Image (tube, rainbow, N blue to C red; front, side, top):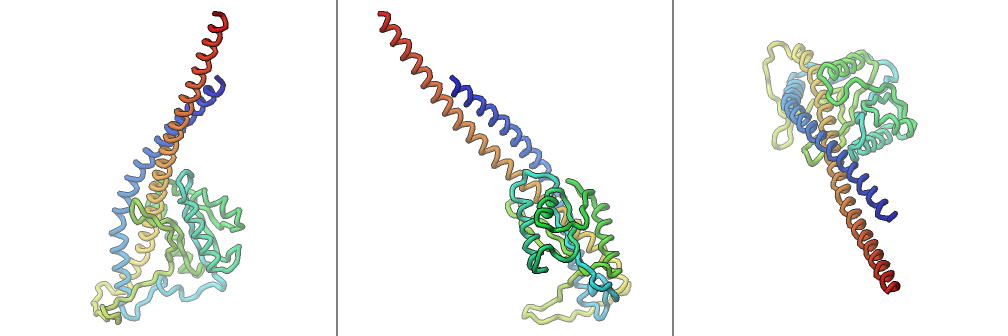
Length: 295
């Protein structure tokens, strides 16, 4: 009797876990649909703006801008900034582990030793403990974004980077995040946000093409307006990709947990039936043996 009672408790516990993971899966699916719509809606604008700026910068002749070439004067030993974007919550499979593994490989490859030089900034609570354990000092942790980062908050962060870069306080800004490619594929990426590196236009045979444009207003003014907008839009797209990747990772992880709980419940139910059948057989044997002894 004790064995069947114990198995029954396990069946109930597994059933409760399955209900929780199923609910979390449904919530993650709903959030993923909204986040995917936001990420795919902003991507054409970001790519179009970046393409326009790179073409303008590569065809404007000797026109330069601090966001491309760097400031005229920079402080000695100005550090670089690496922004690592992780999640605030767990239960999202290998999402955080992939980002943090990429971050550690990047830091070791660029500095050659740990702890790394430069400033490390962090988004999300899940990366704090990992970096602390690996003796990586975090200069600043951004906790203002949450599950739905608004453009205003991301714009303020991008503007801070732009101001510090133009003032020569930092040498570069790179972002390590999870890039959303499709619902079935996400990849950890390292993106250089500052300085921007325009792509030179090339012909089919690989030679540089010189296309002549007449700019109105002047190219300097266009770059002055478009380059900061490009940095802000690119960083906002990075946050959107990170959020939708987190939701799809949690959705997949909760789906796997729900399926595993369902299989475990079936196994426990089978064990319960076998134990109950063995108990009934034993009781019948005792009754028959008792009746035979009395008869």
